Image 1 (cartoon, rainbow, N blue to C red):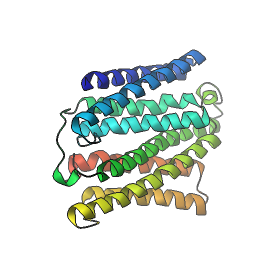
Image 2: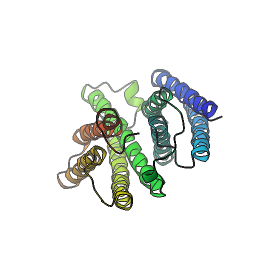
Image 3: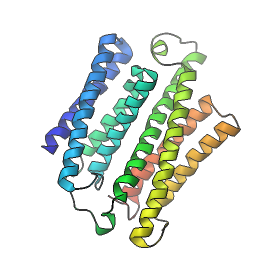
Image 4: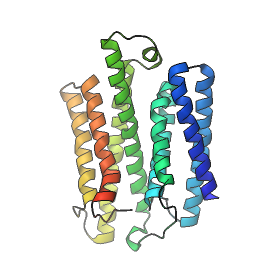
Length: 270
């Protein structure tokens, strides 16, 4: 059952990605509506898949790379719906939703067995800490997408290429606002994730901080986004500089999420 639900969600996100690409070149109201309906259907089925694995495993399904990548994708789609509700700019889905599909595709290639939790992980802190971390990272992922869109729009504006895709995308002012909003959401979520993780570590291992590679790179990620917010508020770094920094920040997030698990020895390894 869980496999069927997962594959259905993957199929919906794949269809959304294809429609999103078509919409960029031959945009129409019908395509936008279809993309939103398919995204909603995929999200509902995806949620059911996560709930099924929760019921079987008895914990939030993030204990394997398959589950973690899937849950990351779910959070990205959740953030996208928040943006759609707030700004009503569905065309951004053509850039954001493919990230969810790529995460789901990578998840589909990984082992799917539901493994029991290690004793140290059998805590109510697991759901709290990981949900905050994943949701914060998803906000940074979408900020990465809006940062890339900002650079595209700015280049079009400078080259006076003010037709085609330029007319479909939000203005650079709106993209800059969205980028700032997303980082402003993601940063406190990551902060709370680190704090709850430290409290959990103290109850599990007797130490708040162990300098584990995942902890170190999470701290580096936190410092990067703290710097982004600081220089935006104090030095007025907006626009292109903010967009570039949001892209760099998300590359650090990706290394923290995937690189640490694949390349470094960590107690957080899935």
